[in-house]
Image (cartoon, rainbow, N blue to C red; front, side, top):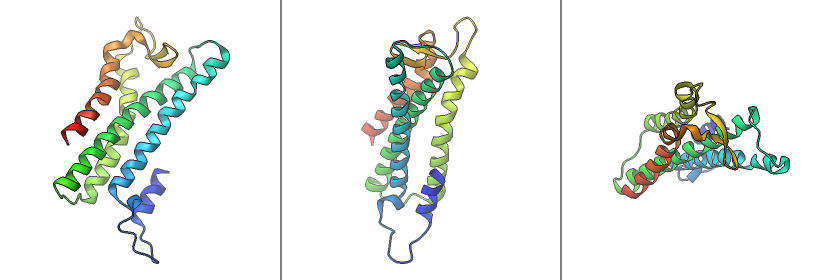
Length: 169
């Protein structure tokens, strides 16, 4: 989906001048990415329906998938909101024409960083004494409660930094 989105942005239309279409702009692509990551978080949250039907939450592969989807969606959405805020400030207030290489770098960088954040916790913070990284937490599966400090570094930090970027811009 992302590849076709990038192709539609780069492919000029022969019949009309599409330079000013929102979907053809950097901000438009960033916005679509934010919507996709919000959808990812929403799907992760909707998986809680299974727990409601079963009237219990069980640890396993399904629980891990739910937790990873929620964390990825939450972190990636926060990063895209930050990118949109900074980009809008640069374009509107500073009147900077953002070069395509910056767009591609940011585009790839946010997706990479979002994926990296959900891998860092299980790879670097998990210990046998504290149990699995993703586990049951309240009414759904998420980062286990035993990992409170690393949870801040791998999720809350990104969510907290995002509004700071919006309010400063």
